Length: 196
Image 1 (cartoon, rainbow, N blue to C red):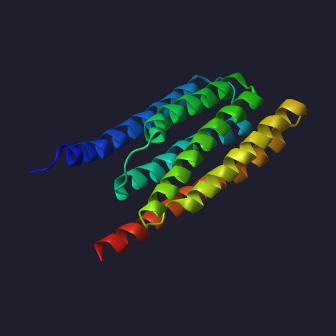
Image 2 (image 1 turned 60 degrees about the horizontal axis):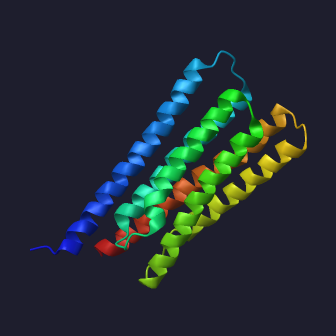
Image 3 (image 1 turned 45 degrees about the vertical axis):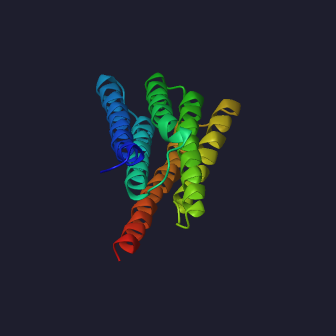
């Protein structure tokens, strides 16, 4: 007969995955409805929308695999990160529709930074249990957050053209795609070791 702790631990994973999936679905729905309501499109809007979508999907992949693969006690960020992700990326979507670039990059920085912090905490927890955590993904998302923060300051301080901003968003998209790929590879290795 399972103990109360085991029952709660099993339900924790289900609740986490459900919250995460709902948050990502709301972000993507918000993004899609904003895109459908836009009257004027540009390469910058397309790049921003693709960056928000990539960010939401890569965070979902990383967290979903991490939540389901690691047997660890929950920490506070496990509960807050979904709401921070939802708030920050929904705010970024709002700023896409208004065209206010500093707000967009600041909101994206908060989303990437909260994801990176959560992954760093998962990494340190995994190390305490003798396992490897998502350190490479955490490093990549820290780099993404730093880059987005730099772009926020750059757009606040200077009048940079939309072409340059569009070009500068592309490395962010590539870094987030790389982070999602590294998460998948890392958890494949963890799960492969666990099954042996």
